[in-house]
Amino acid sequence: MATPPSHPFTYSTADIVFRSSDDVFYKLHKLVLSLASDFFNDMFELPQPMTELNPSARPTDDQEHDGLPVIPVSEPSSVLTPLFLLCYPLESPDPDLTTITQVRAVLEAAIKYDARKAVKITRGRLRELMPSAPLRVYAIACRLGFEDDARDAAKEVHAQKARDGYVEELEDIPFGAYHRLLYYCAIGGGSAPGQQFTFCHTTTAGTGASGLGVTIDGRQIKKMPRRNPGVIPVSSPPSSSTSPPPASAAESSPATSEPSVNGPSDPQPSESQTCAADDHDVILITCDARQLRSAGDAMLRASLVLRALAESPSASTEGIRVPEPYATMSILVRIYDPLEHVEIFNLLDIHNALVAAEKYQMQKAIALLQASLKSRQAAVPATANGTSGEFLLIYAIACRFGLRDLAQLAARATLRCNLTHILFPAVDEVDISAGYLHRLLDYHRRCRAAITPIFETRTWLQGIWRQRVQNALCHSSKAPDATIPAFFFNGQQVQLQFPALKWACWYEPYMKAAADSAPWPSSVSVTREDVLHAGLGVNLTYPHATAPTSPGVTPSGPCVHCTQGKGAVQLFQFSQHVASTITSLERDVNLSWPAATTSVAAEQAASAASTSST
Image 1: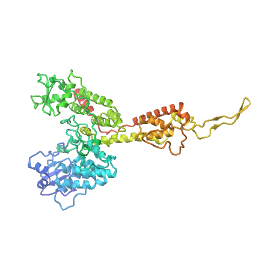
Image 2 (image 1 turned 90 degrees about the vertical axis):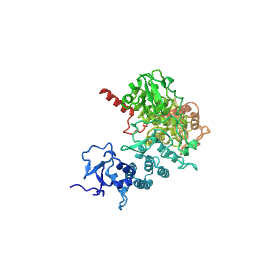
Image 3 (image 1 turned 135 degrees about the horizontal axis):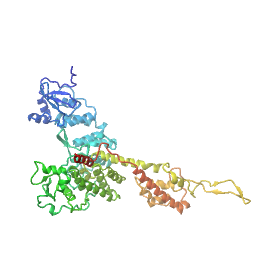
Image 4 (image 1 turned 45 degrees about the horizontal axis):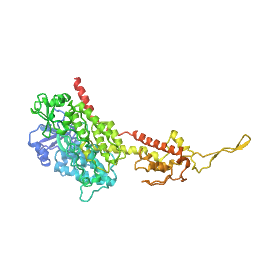
């Protein structure tokens, strides 16, 4: 005997059957679904294959159920049952959606099928759950493009101080959407009068994370990022120009910073590369309706993908049509021109060309562009917060292409840069999730925690340096000199005294000054001249004025031993030891990396190797 269904949709008057991904059947009415959903209305008006709603559905022999046509869909019954309950005019109460996970699944299905009432109800339920999980609601609202809900959730995140927590939904929204939330919280949860802060999207044009269309079962629904930033077809990569920030930041210049992504202008292809080609040349027709000539067939030999496009029966006789712009494809053409020496300084140009190179599986171009990116990282001076945007952009690009070592270097370069108080709109051009920003800021927190014991305890000091500092011959000691019992030498009584051994008198004042040398002490700040002077008891004009010693330490004035000769030299050497310890401890902290993410280049290289072997 068949198990009765756990839903009420068993109508004998039904004229269509839906089957869930877990093989639950729903006997429904086309008329009701058409009234509830424009998507179903359009579908039922046009003859379509039964697998239209789920192109990846597994083949099945039973295309009918109780004599009615069956439409297999990708949603499970836990989603379809509440969705159909919201679509049908039933007297029963609305389904009990108690968790954000349930609400999100039903809401996404309602959006997918254009079920207006279901969207309204589930969206309202999402707002009701906002106080209990504001960061999750914010991420879902950004993913689905609900700006009003995202704004209200941002207010709740700020009020609850919940911005630093991790939620899985961060992997589904763009890097920039989370960055704007952090900035909003950092400036106090508000904006200037008359300004409107936008969370879900920037005005950036292109195919960065905030400009991607998401397809649900073959149907494009919303502008969303994908969870895994590894594999995605390229449709016009973003231009090199950076976009303005959200309105509130655009009108407040201190809040927005553009990384120095331009560098020297990259040379364009020579006139010979755009003129008429001979029979052996390759003509590329870019998305901006420009023609680009590649001398010979080097491009086709470098890319099996381009060769397949050229040999396709539908190929144009005018040339190979590509969805990338001229500026991007011209870089690839120059790379494969034996007469060109290619140097690319613009970070977004490197990014866009690398996206295209990986799409077309052009291994030489991939290697050269990755080398250019690494050279750019090494050339950026880590001297001021003004360069933090460039390091952040390098970090984002490295994450986008799975370059873990480069991402670690760029992340280390952003230490002590206040990334949440300034917006960097150029990063929106790079298609990575907000999870990478959370992992970067978590890396910052762990690096800072790693060096904190240096300034709060003495246990970190071990080995030879502990002996030197702990057994210093400090002349300012208040302790009595050490005295050994009297003894006779050459018939005379001798009484010897030795200075008491104690921690060097400069240790506490120096460590206090080093701790206050910067909001986040660095290997540079702890070796500054004013910090060393503080340890020696010299009057300072010091920006972070503090007491000269720690609680329980009695100031005793400058010590002759410590301010002159070996003592002063020892303090200088000790400051170098503190600096090297800070560097070492921070280097030992590893940047977290998503377990399932692999480099697109690695995947394509493996695919190419497999193809060549066969």
